[in-house]
Image (cartoon, rainbow, N blue to C red; front, side):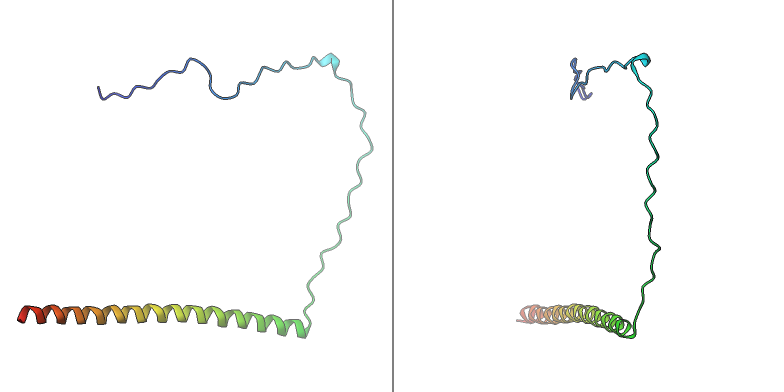
Length: 104
């Protein structure tokens, strides 16, 4: 009763491709090799030239990114700390209200 029964499908599923007959070797004509293709000339890799102005801009941009990311992280930490303190204050208030109800 609890044994799984897998149905048998007598027909194949999916797309059935017909059998392709290979061409006989006698029908193939030999191909004469053409002249080899010219090899493209790759220019030499140039190094990046940093001028004092571009180096200063790069340093300023990196510093700005560090300041922005630091500000976001500090604000997230501050938000978590404020939430934790407010939950703790709510817990103390609720506890005092419950204790006050028990006394009266």
